[in-house]
Length: 579
Image 1 (cartoon, rainbow, N blue to C red):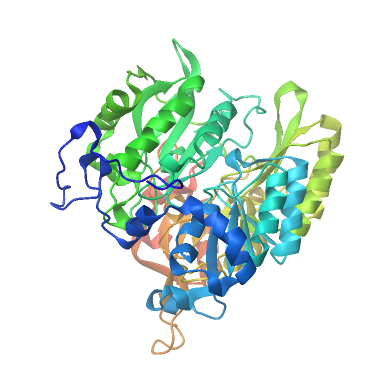
Image 2: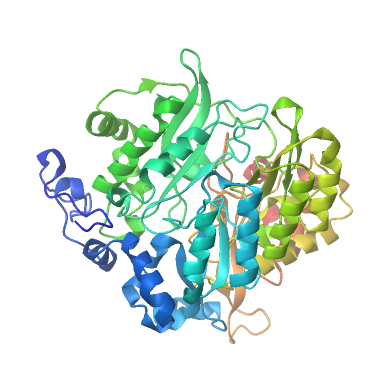
């Protein structure tokens, strides 16, 4: 074993015999003695783990430049520290799948800052803003993992960036890679008046004890966590590898319901309840057990089957719970009830809301999550004037300012509006998310951020004659824009899900392709939620996207019964009304 990463156990756990997976071939499950690397990623991870590369970045690559970085570090280990090479400018989406990685690499990086629970102070927020302005050409995005993501980062600047982040208690450890990534938490944890239980202590314990732990730094693939005690189910628990959902147990009081095995990408699978009740003080221990199951039993042969959701699909929740209890916890978990459906309404926390102790929190909606160094500084200034030192990023690419006294709410809303952060956002600004897209991502097929921003502006202009879409209680509508099939912006669970594709040019079918989207409709989470409905051949070019969305939204508003949701309408609508 190296001192920077977990290696396969010397012997199979509990001396289990090695056996083939359901395909008849070994799946690379360490617990079954299948420790021989079965693909190139597993081979280099076994040679040396990702945590080791930081020292080389600081001592060598930052001094010698981009050309000095070998491929295994550049496209592999550096992800363990939040670094991905970004896409070389000028390469269109039609060439994404045909080029080698080195042909797509630019000599700049995307960098994700790990922000567990999305929590930052004013000091931390100003540091994030300064890094954007000094090192990232002013870029910054709020991601759906509650992170801040930068672009245009030079390897030469990484030592200074890490020094600045670490000085205020932030970092990039395991922000990416085959590791336990940023832990999602309710953006209003410890503040919301209707909270069931505050999961913050559990998040802090997980991070303190196990993030950066070499024993958990070589998982089959990424591992995503959500912890929320909000009745509004605000961390998308159904699509996390593990999630703890706040419930009030009739016998044991407030705690969490345990969910395992969710994930989207090209094979979307929603997580399943294990039927187990987990008290707040046991969350970290149970989390540790589940992540070790993934490490030991997870499939490592094929990267596209290496997520926990595939193991859960094969085992089922009963077996998964049995293995967790008998092999990893050494005790039974209490049975518990399912969480009640969330209250009607949105989970994005945008607008003005009552908080504990007579205060308020204010949620704002940057357009498709895109902010900037200047905007972050403006956010910090506005929050300071309002007397707040607690800012939260949300899993829906939004921002929340906590602890605002009633007399300062109106001024804060105005101050935030002045820097482009609206608490009075239209349903389109509130509901539209976008991944990084062709602008910077090497996997993307189409542009997303600018497309999403143009779509929001067009819909606000075209549907200005429908005042109810611009009120605080406007009917919810989610539009998720993805640049490729990997669903980083959760296209399959959106009311209108858009997956980037290349399409024949309507004006010149024999000429070069144009950017477009495959459309799914009526997806969602919560009661009655599920994967969106695909209609055969339902696609649109990027240029025609505003026409399509306007058309289908007007049909929904015209045909819905009372306050019928978009997803409910889609489920009963004729195919011709959805085209």
